[in-house]
Image (tube, rainbow, N blue to C red):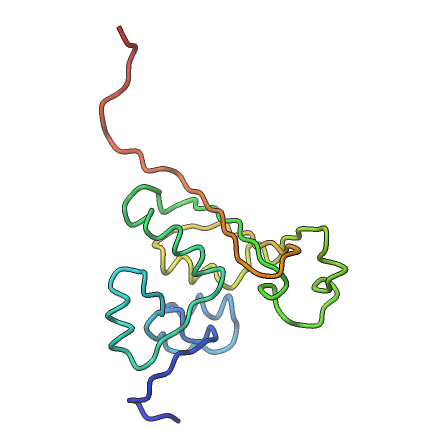
Amino acid sequence: MLPPATKVVDLGADHRLVDPAAYEQYYGGGYHQAWTYGLPELPGQRARIASSHRVANTGCYAVATILALAPLIAAGLVEADDVVVVATSGTSGAGRSAKVNLLGSEVMGDVTPYRVGTHQHVPEILQATGATSLSFTPLLAPMPRGNPVGGDGPAHRRPGPTSGPRS
């Protein structure tokens, strides 16, 4: 065990989630206490990270999605419910296991959804953005790097003057 004063950044998912039930549902196994979430672009996080001795690194899909959606939801420009995200990665984002679906010959010329509705980054995205519902579709594509993410949600309708016929 490391001394408490030793600074540690966990690159796995063990300490990202504050909700034990979400951790068990998406990762299985026993829950580990949440550490300071390591995304300094979120309000207040830079100071929390600087003063923490234990920091949980973000997931790849999660950071790309959070950076796009969190400011919009926080500013009230997008409603927190019914958020839809479609994200793409190459084989490095889909895992490094020796599986047939990850072979170059299988990936080239095709885009394939995977873990739709069960992807492990869903609770992390919900937790960090303030979204209350999320439809997340990860896609495996023939690309060597990158994590393009597209998202949308209902625009927040602000009360204002109604537009009527012009005279």
